[in-house]
Image (cartoon, rainbow, N blue to C red):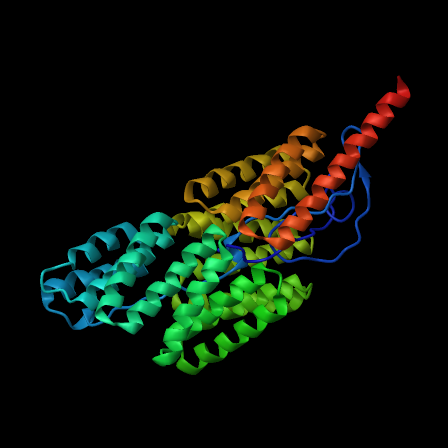
Length: 419
């Protein structure tokens, strides 16, 4: 969601923007190691710029942790709205589900059931990318579970709080919460909770650029999910493993994993997972230069994200569509999509996505020869990446800024030489 892939070098772009032939353009997706070739920009400026990252939730597939305690076996006045709410949640009708979960708070609702309801409501808000609301409910669940000495509920609350910090880019805090949740889940032998935290820890290592470590975590989780028969988890794991192979440049292997994940998601009807896999497949086709196919997959993903109201995913797909148009040389159209994505990521507080959008906008202005404006956006992106500790993105964005500054100096030298 998050990122789910890193620094992509796409294929050649028509006109002044040629990814791999004229200028690098970034998608937070699979990275292909290709040798850059300088080309003249719109003002005769030689641009050989490494890619900024692009936000996409497809770069990481996370699983929130549900906890239901004894709610399915509670009295009808609690059980009935609870059952209806769970069905609405499965249908991605999150706001309607929230109202019915709230109706389950009755005088006879036990503390553990209250903790469970707060976790379920928090998960709905997280799916809607409303982080503050989600965190508030997770915190309530954490407090209630601690007081009731309910370790399963406590582990779920802690793990989900970790997801909030992941989304905000506070990786050290996220790691701490996931490790707390993992410790408890392992202690009480809750295999599903253990797997969720292991997978989310893997996402953190991937974000930090420790791909082999991330892959090891994903493999551990895949084994657990297959052992306990959790198809939803298996699909997420296959998708995350595909991301690692994509980062390593093993595109066909990545595509195979994404397709396997997509097949499972469609089989079980999990829309958010389907959208993530479609987006990742689109990225692979973009790298391979099959732009019409890439655009089709990204559009399918965008339609699903809008259908289920998942803002973070919508921003991802808008960015990826923008990249395809950029690769086609339709820079104004690309810029429009990046601006749409930036607006959403700022609304939901997804800092890494915001930084990625700013970086991509900066690249477009660089291509247009508006180098001061390009630097303004790239420096904003760099500040955010530094705040969230995204090491790879920091280095790449610095390289981009350096290349543009050199281009400015070169242009000034050419101007002074002609006076």
